[in-house]
Length: 303
Image (tube, rainbow, N blue to C red; front, side, top):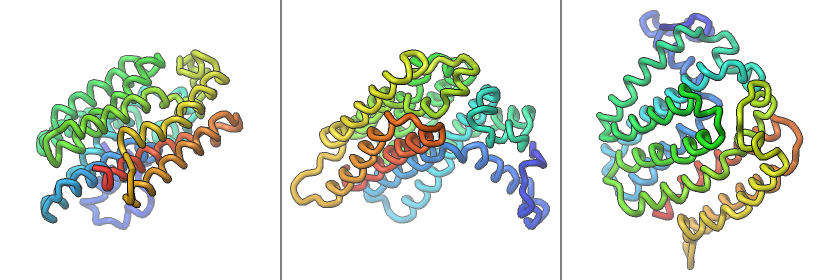
């Protein structure tokens, strides 16, 4: 399954039996390296926050976090593999560094990897007690990447927004059964993300137009999309405050978390109307990913 083009010279320093494993690990990172702030880091961070909230003993804490890292790596890898298999045309314009476009992986090997990951992911989920969430995410991934959902902005935005549920649900359930508190966090994040995720599309307008992909900005026009998103991000700290962080009194960590997350939201709101370059819009979207991770890290103080 290994693609020889994927392995850098440093892999040759590994003992011979381990070189294919090292090569696959490096290649898997190349497939997901543009998205860990959206899929890998936030899931692990939320698992840490929930484990801290429930005061897990050190040995179980360590095992749970290790399982979380593996689970969310596969969560993101399964999505990226199928997304890049079907998105080669626009990737040549928007993301030429991706492995398939850059010639670091071949179609056949990538298909095999996708089949292996789609099999391994729910099995790892079963070991962690969250296999139902893994299957739900795989169904959403198939809808988005393989059945054409990504070409329709309503489906695309709903899958990514509602994808918060199979993202944060298992992060909590690895530690303890779901509660009303867990559903409050999941829904309070899923709804605004569903509405604001079109900020991701601003960076890819050229490639999306080239392949006739319908996104929120292409459907409603770039000026309206930027105005809508700017207003949404300006108001997002209100949701953070009243539904999630609820800083009050002398809770200094919670107030600090509110200041950081609000600052990120207002920075995005200020940047979105400024049409400059796709690289500029990419950095704006990256701030959205940082907000998502930061708000989940704030659960350490808010749960």
